[in-house]
Amino acid sequence: MARALINVPPKAKRGELIEIKTLISHNMETGFRPDNTGKPVPRDIITEFVCKYNGEEIFRAELYPAVSANPFLTFFTIATESGTLNFEWTGDNGFSATESVNITVE
Amino acid sequence: MKSVATAAVATALLTATAVAAEIPLADRKSGYDFMGRETRAMQDDDTANPGTLWVLDGEALWKRKDGAAGKSCADCHGDAQASMKGVAARYPAFNAARGRPIDLEQRINMCRTDQQQSTPLPFESKELLALSAYVGRQSRGMPIDIADDERTRPFLQAGRDMFNQRQGQLNLSCGQCHDDNWGQKLAGAPIPQGQATGYPLYRLEWQALGSLQRRLRNCLVGMRAQSYTFGAPEYVDLELFLMWRARGMPLETPAVRP
Image (cartoon, rainbow over all chains, first blue to last red):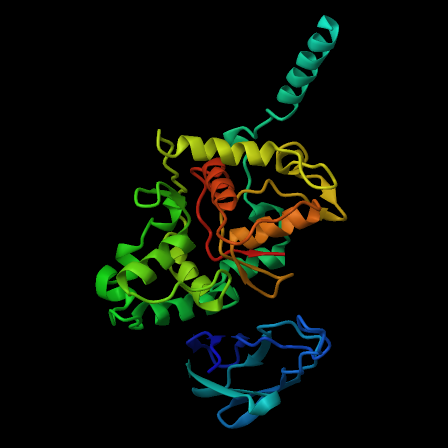
């Protein structure tokens, strides 16, 4: 199971711009590197990241082999209402990881 | 004949003074001070520092029972936040059983073989790095405090000699870059002082956490010198000297470096 770190302010004022930072452990093997015996190591990367705020999609990213290991994605949104932010990473070889964080908007 | 001998002595003296330029204590700088604003921000924020991923893995390993003894690290040492505070700042440290200094990774593996009756973790394996990062994290911000006594002194001297020894096809010593030319540029990148304050650290170039020995191996390969196998006494002596050289500086584990 991949380990993910999420940084979302636990409290925000309504209408405030908040920064969301996400970091997930993943090798992001490009598929272009040879192993010790010269055979290419098969590609194994995260291909998609989606963030939903109370069920509504607010951010989506497509990832490619040039993205570094342990991808760090940060983005901004406007705090509209209290609720949950859901994060989902999907990738090669059936990779899937989810995280959720609660936010209180006053 | 006599003039040849005099010339040889004169050359030896010149060489001796050329390598004697150790950085004054007050002028020492961590590699952190040579980094850009963004990389510094990455190290300072635990949720942006990828080293945290290893620290969290280490925390899980700390509590995992292992080996024939069926013991976890926590079974002997309890809460690492209390028991491991300051430990990493004192390593490499002299080990009486081995009769020489050992580094933190070797100490962890000694616990694994002797106490847990398990197999030692391979050097640079994810598990060993996770454990050393977790133990190191407990000393973050504490001053590096290497014992300089009659037991460690011969090994400190061996490390210092290696630091000042020209080697490899480029015929360079560590000190020529890190004592004499720090702050200058090497292929566009600043040359740091080589203060080993943040190991194991996340190097963006590696896209992973790595130990000080991995970093030393990098430098030796760059000098086109013969590198040693991981865990070799030569590395530990050099680690000991480097940590002593950074004495009093705060530990940054897990640091981030470009």
